[in-house]
Image (cartoon, rainbow, N blue to C red; front, side):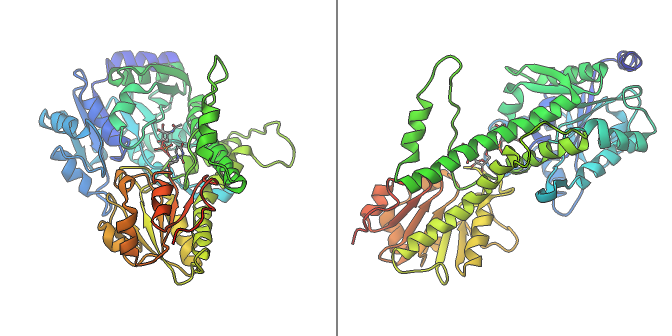
Length: 477
Ligand code: SAJ
């Protein structure tokens, strides 16, 4: 099998024309970097002209970056490759026919984590569109994070069904998962090692040819397609697990009257060959497009591959337990707000709470699966009123998000800090209290970015994740 495909690729010659399906946080920087490679003649960015995302096509073809939030290097690179005529964005997928390689970076959310059911509709639609115009001798690479078994499974089936071609014989197929973080997209693609897993050796080699030119310090790590799927879902699952471990520690420290950040510094200080302690940061919750769902992809991989691991009987998966700890943190923030209000004889019912930060990560406008939403739901369910501030986010359906901080703080009984935006690191306890109009407003710090003593000094009721050393402080009159 691999021989025939390898021959086809060598007859086809080196990759010169590339298609990138899905103009989002992964597709846009990838397409720009491919287009910046001298020997890649042209890159098509395929984007559906939908009501929600069609606007990106016009912006991108003007060389403008449609992504919200700072993305160092991306605006300049887009300007460069568009003015050089090396990158065009189009909804017309017929151009896939002229592509030597097509990468697919489409969202793979979960419909219902409880029964491990992902929403693969967007991905399947993308695969069908690619399959309809797939040419013999081309390579298809899935960059989206997917359930182990998907590349060899539904992806292969759909592409073969739509194209009438056979994977591994007429076209190559591989998985090369994205490893980007908002705010450092270009840097991550260039510098992170790239996992590349083909369904066969020829597909892996062709994918290595595709990605090598965009890497600067990053290396290629080749493996099978299924191993690549497990690598990606597991690396995010492990991160989620590490965060859950320190979140649980923070909950314990609150109960024990200890400062989790002192403990964390202590734990992190043990450094020696083979005994490093990678301890992460506790906080108000885990959001984004990746960590809240990739554990479910990994768990579902067992089903898809019909794999039954040897595991302690009747015990819950460690990974799923970690998910429930991290999903609890925004609820814990609501409990802290309630406890703070109770200290001044108030309840959540009828209280106005200023929620600072809708984005899931600092200094970005990305609010996918934001933990702020769970907090807001919890407060509203307890009869409270929530007003949100975020310097980067607006127009979220049904959520009152403002860019004017004073109007959000005005008349607030409590303030909850959910995102570590730079703007919140210099909150003035005096000014904020004036705006609240309360003698003892409550502040709940979910990212350890405010100085508890500065606020306590000014009569605030302070609560912080993991701050057992301060959460029971005396109230200053
Ligand atoms: N978070 C904590 N404590 C921490 C780190 C993060 O509470 O110590 C929270 C953040 O506030 C955020 C969430 O977790 O709400 C996710 O943050 P993140 O820093 O993991 O950001 P992501 O989700 O954009 O990036 C992750 C990264 N995965 C790993 O490092 C294993 C990134 O490399 C991936 O490319 C990305 O997922 C992805 O796209 O899969």
